[in-house]
Amino acid sequence: METLKEFMLLFRMSPSNEQPTVEQMATMQNQWKNYIGSIASQAKLVNTSRLGFKGSCINPKGQISNNIYISDNQTLSGNMVVKAISLQEAENLAKNCPVLAMGGSVEVRPLIPMEF
Image (cartoon, rainbow, N blue to C red; front, side, top):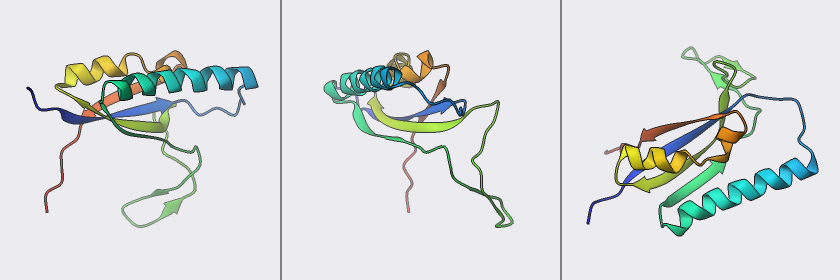
């Protein structure tokens, strides 16, 4: 049996001031519930979390700006750690992510354990 490695899926979205309707929110929640549930049912989910769209950035000089980092009109909106045999398998798990249908993107990265 092959050893499973951990990969982080980084979800990126364009920030928006538009508030989704109640129906849109219910649809999105069901899509995410089904997506996360599918990965969990395969025993490949480690954890997942959403990120708020407010925060701050601290530069190397220790200066704090009261905004989040946005590049190419996208910012991190959440992440998920999954177990997979390979990067390709982790990519295949990411292909069904609801953020893609919402105009966002998913970056897939292997996790490298920190050794002290």
